[in-house]
Image (tube, rainbow, N blue to C red):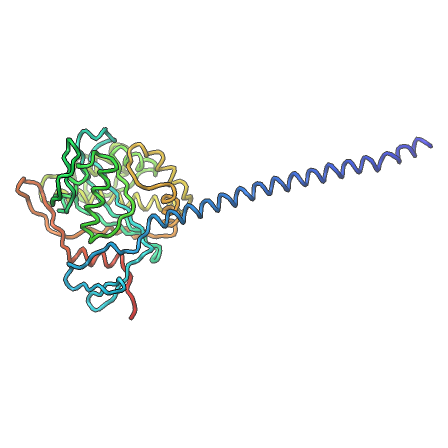
Length: 354
């Protein structure tokens, strides 16, 4: 056989080896793609499972609400409410969270009682695709559980300023639960599935993490001048929201400043949630040392995803009432229950066509 024929004889063997290598490479690539797709599917499935669990934990059917003492409110056998000739049903898609701002810089050991200077009920409504915030005065007179500060033993029920509810629980989970119970009772028994309390250092960190919040002071005080917009960052945040005059209107004026900050924070948080909902969890992780919350991962996943489709018009509702000076020379705020009922009906209920 000639040299040329020998070369021709080995060529088919080389082609066969190349074909095997190509086939093996394609198989490896297909397996890799399949693994990646499988992992993505698992992640998507995990997301929707967490979201479903979160939604189940964050919503209720409204069965705990009691309007029996409200003049003009008629409860039907179906659980609806008739008021001023109109029928309403509870919006069971709603989620609400009580947000509390504690008057201290960071979590302590609970040895010194603390109070809440800020109490805001955040309501997420997927049906109407909106977020509503209801600011409640720290001085609002509420029914609350009283515990011995030293022993922690239950002593009974009393009516006192909302800010004090937090002081009876040692500054942790119990304090939050006592405040939630007081607010729930004030709001006719509405179920509040979750809470989050934040200390001043944590609040400053959140404000800084979103690049600061612009506010325009309504009055001149301290470092701030009426009408001159300033960006709150670092120590300016506390300097703006914490001071108050110890008068009947002092807390109301401070609440207006706190609402300005909260309004800006919510708008920035929604922007972050729309861009990348997971960033909300990252922000929480950066301030978790100064936060006490009942929100678990599933709840956070659901809320971050749901909030991305919602709007916030910048309006913060306030609970109406009258401020008077109490016997101990502390302001006491008595809620207008008729006005509160109509607010609850407007936010938590849906009109029913008959």
